[in-house]
Image 1 (tube, rainbow, N blue to C red):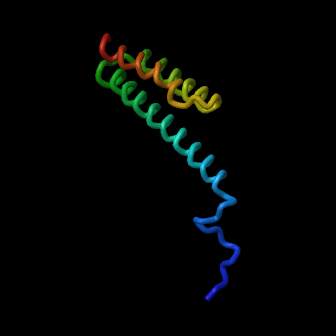
Image 2: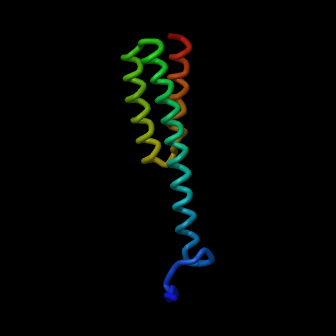
Image 3: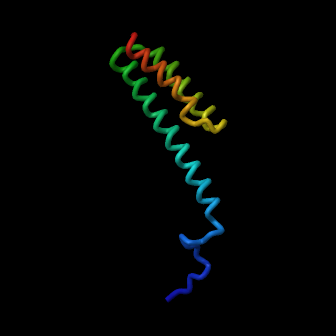
Length: 94
């Protein structure tokens, strides 16, 4: 058998802080991606079902800008949420 004394194990206490920070970053990214996907679904509804291409384009630009700001500031999906609400209102009103 091979000798794996240098391999990391689940019980390694020196790596817990790094694992927790990686998991927190993964969860934040997942939350932001879910918010962006929901916005894109509303954008598709605006463009495809209702025929408002310009509004959909503005919504797409705002969604990507909000996701970038949320990723850079660490606020994540909370920056994308107002865009989601505006797109939802646009779907209802238009």
